[in-house]
Length: 239
Ligand SMILES: NC(=O)c1ccc[n+]([C@@H]2O[C@H](COP(=O)([O-])OP(=O)(O)OC[C@H]3O[C@@H](n4cnc5c(N)ncnc54)[C@H](OP(=O)(O)O)[C@@H]3O)[C@@H](O)[C@H]2O)c1
Image (cartoon, rainbow, N blue to C red; front, side, top):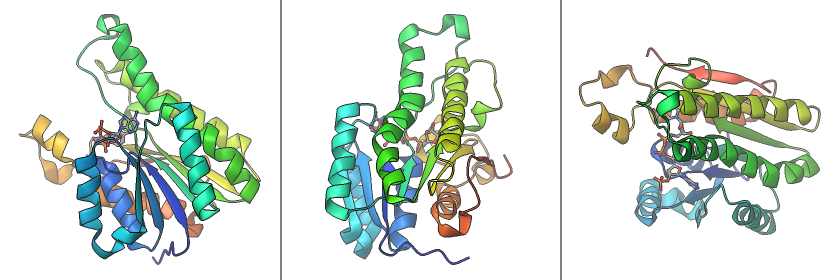
């Protein structure tokens, strides 16, 4: 498969995180201009260093993607600088579990909705009108297997991810025929450093690697996936 992003501009929200880092590198290696949001300067420095010579195509912005005004400013800045946005990948999200629904603190419940749903909403609200206007663009929102497989002890997380999928599905219906495509990705547990530390005795070989999931996201954002719209794609590997 040959996918080329030369001359294309992609925004990776959370682009320095466990999955986001690999997604950012994948787009850079295909020639894209990549704008990432980050929170931790060290994470951004690590990404820039891993990007090597492609680092000149990488730009970082310290933005809270649940903050509507900040995201609007970011999207305006991207369009002012590049005049286009070909892809938006939202890898911002978080997990909390190990407690039943009635024991879940309301603050934690709200935090799950904010991180896993509001992030996608705020990003879409700022981006979609401009993408519709330009007549193209691919949006990929990272949900989770938990969106469709609702285990005990993670109700707030599962609800937030299921909500995120529903939201993207509705958005896909709304932009049908505009040239903008919207899809969700459903990872099971990913082979990230954080997960290895959290579950040291697991068989890491069974966990999908961030790089493998990044290839799927790259494909979904490419013209080769022009017929994929409104999908929620499982990327479970063999786990
Ligand atoms: N890892 C898994 O096993 C797994 C499984 C299924 C689904 N997922 C989903 O896949 C996505 C990526 O997961 P991941 O493992 O890469 O997570 P991660 O390592 O925590 O990366 C998420 C990134 O988003 C950033 N972030 C968090 N809140 C933010 C905010 N309000 N504004 C801007 N950036 C923010 C984080 O910054 P900080 O580091 O500063 O918090 C981090 O850089 C998430 O949606 C996650 O729910 C992951």
